[in-house]
Length: 358
Image 1 (cartoon, rainbow, N blue to C red):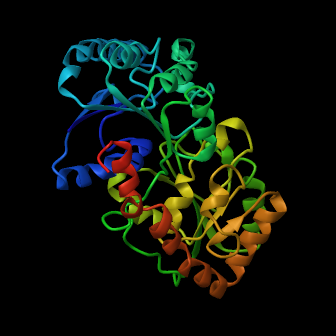
Image 2 (image 1 turned 90 degrees about the vertical axis):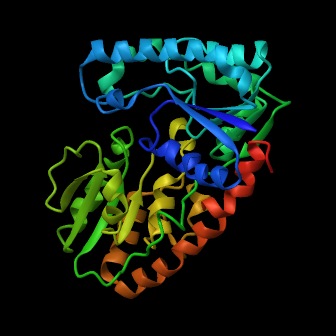
């Protein structure tokens, strides 16, 4: 078997790729399964992708990616399975998926972990938004042999467009053996409330800020935000950490508790709870909004808290800030949930089944 991974970004750069399938490359190596990775963007463009301007370079990179995808069509004969994450091309019609599945009759595994049929783009790249084919998702679903979805909401969407494909719930997972393999020591002197995420999700913090501002008048703590861009808010507790892959685990281990607020909209329903998974895998209680898969990951009052209103957020944060014993007890319960249901180890049979090598 030879698998072709068609992906948007260079290896090791994007969280959706790292935690949905890149972690399983080691498993494929161990089983002697051949695979090839073909990103749309090259690394030099990834480094400027979300910076403002630079439109000529970005445009040339997109054109280069389109040409590479076109010529790749003539090489598909040597691959048994084509695994496509999100889309083969970020703009225009899904020509690659159409020709691969309809003309070349290739087995297409289509994987996505967000509600990517809903318009959602970074301000830095808004100039290209009119070229995005958001309706492509339903067409690719209709052509796929297997559809791999990060939660049941996404599975339901895919099911509308293909009643013949195998539609598989394939959760975003954590490598608890080789990466997230340490546990937070909750005896740290100064407590830290933490959030991690990209610039595209930082907007979800805004409704939580008044709660943090209220609590920072009563308690001594740091509010650490790990992201590619800073949170532009004046707060005495705010500490910004620029996200770096090399220090990702060390930076997360600063947290005593991790927050994941979301708005209950169609886009957020497609989220796969990645922040909560990261927090809990490191023994950090997760405080989450009751949106999408979050209520499956977090057991309220056992390994974290489900917070629907501002009062809920304040009550849960106040409890953990004021009661170190409760914080420690909740922490003890976090990691086992991830190991049992959301780890690479527990999900490996499911992932191999998706690839047709169960």
